[in-house]
Length: 507
Image (cartoon, rainbow, N blue to C red; front, side, top):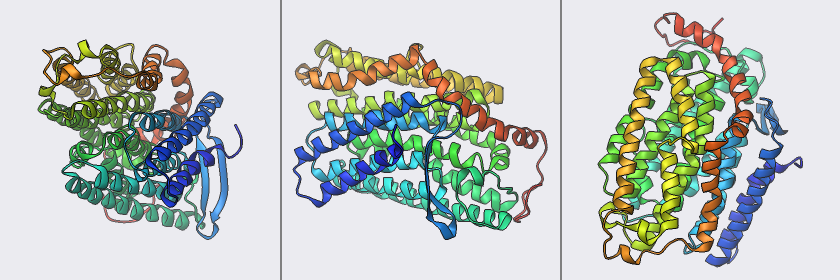
């Protein structure tokens, strides 16, 4: 792969999106442009994946000085932590431009900018650079929900705006604290994550900065109790926007914890690991039970997505190789299965003008290909063996039991809730007596089927042959855990003294 492949994957979509805004493109031409750009990014992503050696080190590195006086660098790279998150973003985006063809050029322009900013956030190894891409990828979401969303889009936009701005400000304050602390300890400025991992932080300010980072990422994941923006935003957003929020942006929240919080705040993570793990499990239970009560398929899937993000986050907080490996694998597995389900529901709404479960029935008899694809994605979502969802969840539960038998038991039993509401929904929508409107439901067209088929095959392939994926991410997970395991065991074994608001450094 050529030297600047990551930069091309980042800035090609961003520049194409800006070009659509500036020049008089029609909606159709904008869609074609977006599709071509996303295909180019996909091809580069596939080449990157195939060439990735999986040694545990950072690969495809690009680094050059940017703001030298503050030690800020334009620094990119990919390792086992970022690989599958990056692949999910490149594989899924072309589907959005293929399936939905009735949007304006502004909508497609925003999608392209989001894709480029997401790839930038995933590949950034400098904290300031990550923060910049983090902010860029949030802006188009506000416009896409506020302009193109449903009837209650304005309250939903206001809620997600308040949440995300609050989280971003907290992250910025914590980022400044980390940079100043490094300067105080080493006499120079840097925001490179490898160098920041050498920081020695302790005391009340370190705990405060840790929770500032955690709240910012917990809002994006979303982690209980910071999930309350999600049902309204996911429901009111256009299906392709919901797809982006659930399949990619939520995963970057988990990725941010792994990449930037764990290496710098290992003491604080170890001290509060049980609390954070309980938040993940409680979120699984609460959102799963909330999903059961929903009559709107999209809203039900929104709560389902939040529930599954709880177990993905749990994989980080258990601080062992099995759980972290499962977390990284499940990021890609959940992105493909839940992302496809949101697109399927968008197609159903487009053809039936409703998302109410009670309005459907008998779709399997009218659209067998659609029903088969939907069933595969749904079964992967609930973790059926032989699908991508099983491997990641199994490894996370295994790691959770190793971390805490009680946490592992709660997480394992909470997964049953997801099986219940998903199978109930599938039976009602696809096999009950057809309604009058359902009789007119059309199966997938050949282009639509060919669009979904690669992702459906990937869901099955990751479930049956997970080793090609696991061998690329496990070495990095082992190195990552090894760096914090000694400190983690020490903190968990000892009773930590009361936290005082000071800036004393740990020995």
